[in-house]
Image (cartoon, rainbow, N blue to C red):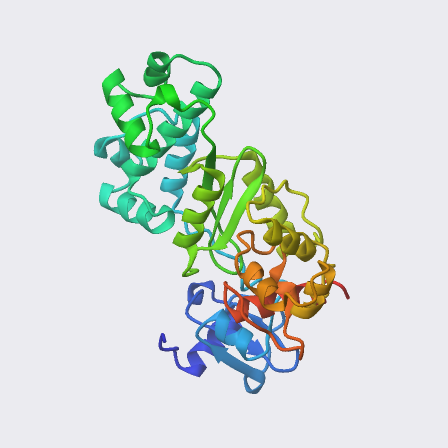
Length: 349
């Protein structure tokens, strides 16, 4: 656990609204039950009325609600400006090949870029570029382009190099890959931490917290269920999801409209559709959920199907609690479940 500065130093930072202390501590105001960032523009509290915390998570566990002015749970943009420019150029020209010298022209060190992509995308920078080129190639093949034309349009210098790279990534040759389903993956920043979103052509099929232990298992299940390949890249469905999540966390959206592509057994699909029918700001027990699908004895099976839900928040398994009213298991952690329930309750007032 990080060591906090001394209380007098922290309080003086609050008085000065010193944003340089951002991330070092959070403050909770006992009279309001609200917690804030050090640089919050709200009225300064008295020192004896303040609790200090090393993390937003600690403040949440202590019963404080996030401030609506400074939004202490809002994810700060962790993408350096130079990398943002690099990503913007890549999105326009995904077929281009970039060397270490090219990267340095953005004011970046190649080692810095490699670490950032490994941390945020689980791929090396060059692996990310290769995946984008394969994704572009699949799109061109599906449109009826010839293999040789697709190879050069996707940034490959030879047909053999393209065929080898494609087969290694997709498990089949380009000529046999027309119509192969692809799930596009993208990282989203949220107030509850980074999430990974996935979308097929039909809609969003994945939204998980990146720290979830079962994430790799969910990837494998999704590939098997859809007979698809997972590749990084852009998606209109994910763009819409990002906008709707922002509105949801701001309290302005109570029902998601983004298209979904559910992939599960017949029983799981029934359970997930029942989850979507639970109104915003309300909860159901597992027993009530079992009754909703007409299988009152399937309480345990309903719980397992909830745990297998791959589209967190949008398919609101966080709205299911124990019969005694207590919070029960949640793949993203109980503190996130509490936050989501409190957020919805607060925005019903």
